[in-house]
Length: 265
Image 1 (cartoon, rainbow, N blue to C red):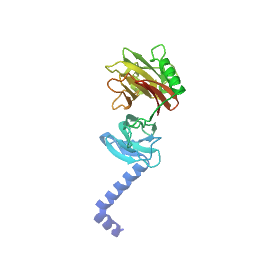
Image 2 (image 1 turned 90 degrees about the vertical axis):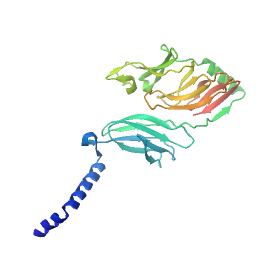
Image 3 (image 1 turned 60 degrees about the vertical axis):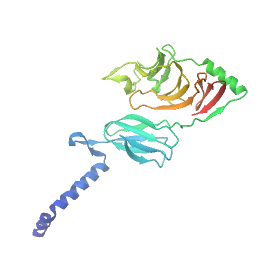
Image 4 (image 1 turned 45 degrees about the horizontal axis):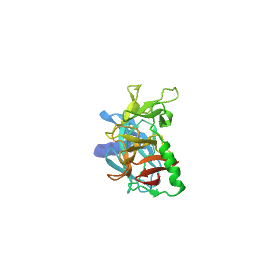
């Protein structure tokens, strides 16, 4: 017993450090972290899916990891975090993500190449594309786009794109439409030039294809910083305004000048 007391007296500081390190490792293993004010909080998990193998992830402007398996799981403190997914040859995707303690938050980033995969159409495909484009109208309050799982209605009014929460019991409006429990219409985008195209992005419920002047671009509906914007088509200074329509689940058709193109998304 005396030898034990002598041992602890001699090495108590080292033992204390080892105990603290072991406790920190154990807390991290079971999902706890030191939060604000030295509080102990349980982390949440950000799950990012459908990632290219060469994607890099940044959280709160700090490098986090490089993707190796098409999916990433990141443990984060509860609260809002700025997440960026970077892929060579593509626009960086950025999102303000709210993490809840002991909960998985799933995000599916938009990976849009900086060089659009456009193919000029010929023959009957041109006629079909022009017919579809000329039949496409801007969404309105009377004929809105149903987005966000049907819980947000997209319309254009006064050259502004508006998102309006759906008032049905089964719908939970997206958080950017609600403040202190009150949900109401929110301006998503308000350019100076006239809006001529607003389409749902194929196979997505949270993004639009928007046309303004000589440009077509992808825009996420969530207007909060940092948001996401990716250009698809830019016509020349003297180019007739490009218009577009969705063609299939993963493509659209557009008129640029006198030519008609199909664009894979």
